[in-house]
Image (cartoon, rainbow, N blue to C red; front, side, top):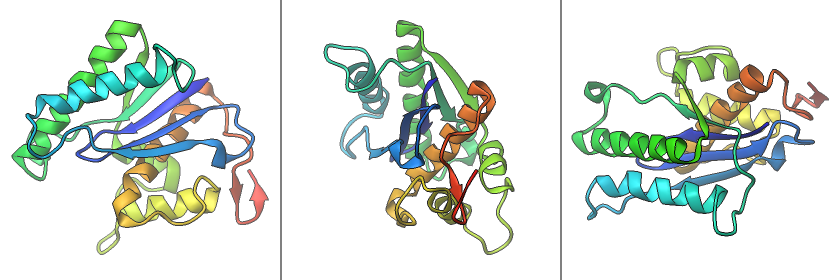
Length: 185
């Protein structure tokens, strides 16, 4: 099952790969900004939609057509850091669903707490903990990344958590070759 995990935000994290991988390092990770600060908010969704189309559909796609796209569920508008972040998030979600409807690609949403519970064993950080750092450390321990991702790229580790949850939930298999503490899971 070819799956795409997305952490839709001002800087979007993307994890792309097949559930039949031989090693977690075969998952391709990207971070992208789909809107420049001076552009209208609608450009984020438009650019995401165009990127998905070019990457997976035509004219010469980089990747196979995804069987499933799993995106982290959007925070409520009132829970966003700023008005700008809320508008960008709405635009990105609209762009994703426009792409999915147009090309008949299945899209599922996962709450961040659900993906984190699956990936690190708890859905919320304890007082004083950084949940993104915990997810980045787990991605490194499992072999998805060679190093613990720096703060600027931690959206990629959230995308990995979404991808891993999707494979476990919908492909009903554990990603092959995932190593924890030197052993293979």
